[in-house]
Amino acid sequence: EVAQRWRYLDGSGEIGFISSVTQTFCHECTRARISTDGQLYLCLFANEGFDFKTLLRSGKSDLEIANAIMSTWSGRDDHYSEIRGSNTPSTKGARKVEMSYIGG
Image (cartoon, rainbow, N blue to C red; front, top):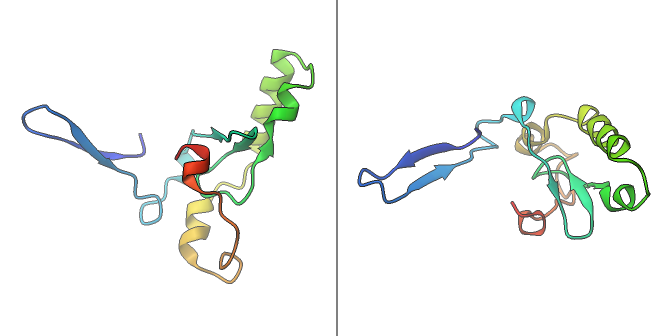
């Protein structure tokens, strides 16, 4: 669980915050998103995705697709929030995917 959650005393709801810049959790993250154009994003702050649509339409078996996803996931650069928070020259002006585009 990456959110800090609080429940209302009367049980009517809850509120949660994901403080991904001030309290990074990159190395524990287990989430990915797929955009409407078939790009697989391994982070809400990623600059680019991986072409998942072509993989799905390639005729590969479920096992081959699963292996490709696992390979992509295991090879990810696992510190987007840390980099984003550093505000270094390499992060300034970099294109960022909009969360609304990938359901974040």
